[in-house]
Amino acid sequence: MVASWPEPIVSVQALSQAGVSTVPNRYVKPTHQRPVYKSDQSGLDMEIPVLDMSDMWRNPEGLKRVRKACEEWGFFQVVNHGVDHGLMERVRGAWREFFDLPVEMKRKYANSPDTYEGYGSRIGVVKDAKLDWSDYFFLNYLPSSIRNLSMWPSQPPKIRELIEEYGEEVKKLCERLVETLSESLGLEPNHLMKAFGGEDKVGASLRANFYPKCPQPHLTLGLSSHSDPGGITIVLSDENVAGLQVRRGDCWVTVKSVPNALIVNIGDQVQILSNGIYKSVEHQVIVNSGMDRVSLALFYNPRSDIPIGPVEELLTDNRPALYKPIRFDEYRLMIRQKGPSGKNQVDSLLAST
Ligand code: OGA
Ligand code: NI
Image (cartoon, rainbow, N blue to C red):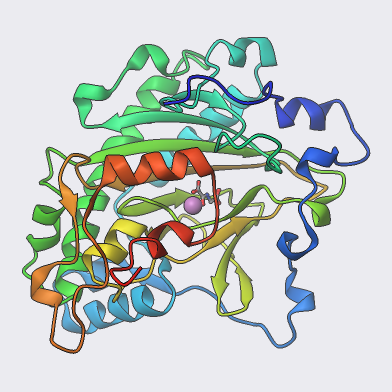
């Protein structure tokens, strides 16, 4: 694996704070990738579904709503999710404080492309790639054997505890969601978790994203279009600053955060396991000139050393296996080398290619 980045890493937050009045060329996206705003998409007045966790739990009508959301959107917001609202606020605040530290302090955690763990500002090692207008911190959370607290920020003082507390609660939510997804596919409640490799073997990692304000937001993206490689993702968004956009056909729908809700999206591994019934939908993040945005994405993934392929019970004569099985560690490697690129990766596993 490549041990270093192809170009020196520049903190976008530092650029933004220095008050640059134009976006440097390496962040200027080609015209067809630039953001599309709602006002340019006539008649677009759609929103991702909002689901109530207590309603989808063991309830046929609720499960139908889950299924519809996962088939049509690959995204939903969830309320009554069991994660303490005060804790959500505190962990987001702690990350904001971390990003507000002087850049020299954050650089102590500078990451490299072999593990991505730590503080960084790019995904992918392609030289001369157009970069995204954001910085991030990436850390491994599960299995706990790979948790390395010395790689986690030590400032602000409470941040490590908060990450663990938040991680535990989101982990529980993910376990319930995986069970719900399983049932909504017509499988036994524990079927999907077994296919993930079992509760105590799954992986999880956290990415804290910082999207600095940007002098020319129409020229760049905070995060380029991608689908999430893993199982499911839980996003704690910034309540006051929109930015996440979800693809809907040829349109981009900007997510309006419901207060205290969490955003759930289907990743490529669930698309593969469900044999394409559930979609991992492309999404991207736009930035703005007025406000910085912080979000936390917790990626909940199947165990990385077992082959992941379509669940046999979901195959029919009319719908044979669409994807070739692949281990998640192999899959992730492919993505980490290339960086975000729409849905190319999961499509490359199509059995017919
Ligand atoms: C991600 C992601 C969305 C956001 O980190 O994969 O899609 O709102 N984040 O930051
Ligand atoms: Ni994502």
